[in-house]
Amino acid sequence: MLDPQGGYVRPEAAIMGYLKLAAEDGAVLHFGERVVVIEPDDTGVTVVSSTGRYRARKVIVATGAWIAELVPQLKAHAQPIRQVVAWYQPRDGFVAEPQRMPCFLRDEGAEGSYFGFPAIGIDGVKIGRHAHFREPIDPAMPNPPVNDADTDLLDSFARKRLPNAASYRVRATTCRYTMLPSEDFLIDKVPGQPNVVVSSACSGHGFKFTSVVGEILADLALQGGSALPTALFSFEKHFGGQPA
Image (cartoon, rainbow, N blue to C red; front, side, top):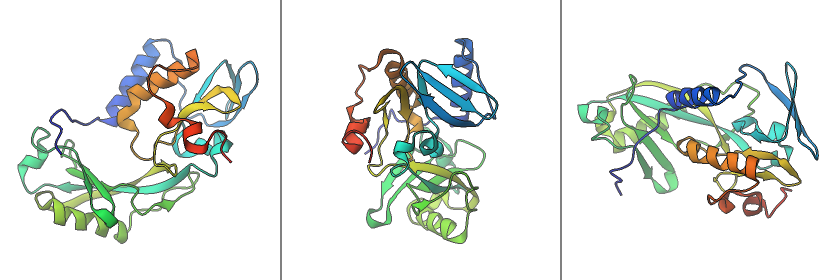
C-alpha cells in the first residue's frame, strides 16, 4: 500500500526547531545536566539533578531508555534494547530521490519487519529491522558495537528486497529502543502521582508523532486531560491501572 502523502522527518533538524520554539516561548533549556530523582507530593514535584534542585507544579518525564530510573513503576515493563541501522550507497539514482523512493515498512513474516528511508542524506539508503535482535541493554552502559551478525542481517535484506540500493554498505551504527510488551506508547499521568506525566516508552516508532504527543502531554500537564484520543496509551490500557 502506497501513501502518496507520506513523508519523513529529519530528527536532528526537528529537535533544533522544537528547542528554538520553546526558548522563544520562554523555556529555559539545560544541557548536560543529569536528573537523579523526581520527588512528587500533593502540591507539586521536586526535581533533583546533578547540579541542583527545581520545584514545579507538574513534571513531564520523557527520558526514553532511562524512563524506569525516574518512574520505578515501569522498571519491570519498559525494556531498553539495542537497535542497529545501516546506510547503503545506491546503485540506481532513483533511490536517492524522495519523490520516487518512499519510506517503507516490509513485513517478512517470521523474519520480522524491516524499514527504510530514501537517500536523503550523504550516507545513502537507510535500512533497519524493527527491534533488531531484541537484545536487552543497560542504558547506563555504552551500546555494544556493530558486529557481523548485525550487518549480515541487514545486508541480506538489502540484497533481497532493494538490490538497487545494495551497492555497498557505507556505515552502520547502534541506537536504543525502549519497548513495552504491547510495543505501543505510554502517555499518561502516573497512577497515584497526578503531578507526574510520563511519555515513554515509544517502542521504536515515536519520533514522527512528536508534535501530537507534545500537544497531549501539555494538555495532561496543564488541564489534566486531553481532547485527543489517549485511552490506548494509558496505564489502564497497558497494565489495568497500576503496574505490578
